[in-house]
Each structure stands twice: as C-alpha cells, then as structure tokens.
Length: 239
Image (cartoon, rainbow, N blue to C red):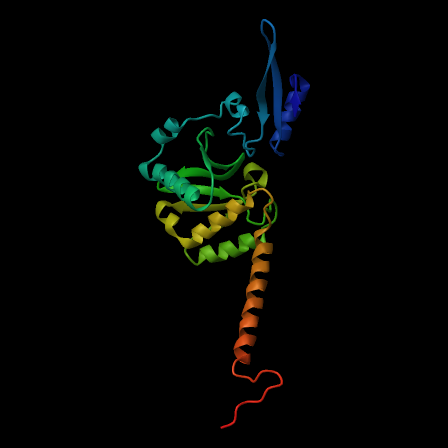
C-alpha cells in the first residue's frame, strides 16, 4: 500500500493486519527544492517475512548493513562458507550477486530475486531456497525427492512457508564441507533453475527426461534382439 499519509486511526489497523499478511505500507514524503519536488518513499509498516533488501525501502526501514559489518560479526568459517558458495554458484550455475544489506541474512541474488538467503551459523549457514517445482504452499514432489535423497546423505530438509511469503520454503543447514557433496550440488542447481525466466517445474522436466531415457533404452533392447537375424526376404547362409 502506498499513500501520502497513513497516520490517524488507520495506522493501528494496518499494523495489526501486517502481522498476519505480507503487507508493506509506504508513505511518500515530498521535499520541495528550488525548482523541483523530490519524492522519497518511507516504509512505515512491514511484515517481517517480506524481503525488501536491495531496495531503497531497506534503507528507510533501517534494515541495511554492509560487507564490513557482516565480516566483523561472523566467525571465519561462516564468512568463508558464503564466499565458497558464491564462488561455486558463479562457476557452475550462472550469474549471482551477493547482497550484504539485509540485517538478518546475507542474500545471494539472481537478478532481483533472492535465490539463497544465508542466515549465518558458527560453521556455515541455514539456507532458504526456492522450491524446484515453484510451490509456495504445499510440499511439492520435487521437495519430497530431494528430502529423500539428502536424508540418505545425513541432511535434513524442512518445508517452511513463513519466510518471504513462501518464496523460499526449502530450508537446509549446510557447512563448508557440504559444498563438495554432489547431492547438495543437485539441490542448488534445481533451485537456481527455478528462479530463471520461463522456468518449468522440476518434476515435470524430470518425468519427461525419464520417459525419454526409457524410450531410448527400449530401442536399444530391440536393436540388440534383432542382431544376427536374416534381413527381410533373405535366407541364412548354409554350409
């Protein structure tokens, strides 16, 4: 909601509403110059689950930090973890931008979207990733698949839709050593692809790929079974 003023009896109602729904209330402050008017947005009411980092609203809401702030606050392992993750993502996935402005997490962005908010821990971070099937409500088939695969490797995937209006519901705790695990790589790749323009559901693409592979396997079996048979209309050579 954007308005010139949200004061008076409406403010209490808006603050109460923002506790239950992902609501942002912005007032436009007008400043008169010598020959122009400068309009500045001021975020006055916010739901904490909505991500405003990387926008002018983060500054007006007092939610901005710097790279130096984070480096001074983190352990060496936690700091190196986010650097290792960013380096791996750039090398194997594609362009990303590290955003240090949020107060509660380091954001790894893909375009304007926060792909991986990192809430630092002593030896790594708690990471919230988008669902590969792009679900923001119920647990998806993709989530069930990766939860099973990663459980076999000792990881626990949780489904949490309270963060950023459900935009990043896949939560996992990772450490530096985990960034060499192929199962973790597969999860990161699937979630990265989910935020690309025109992305398709991971489960649908995986189903199509399995059908294609099954078709190719069937053709190979038929080809192998046909080896050594006479050509149509021909007779085998007799000694």
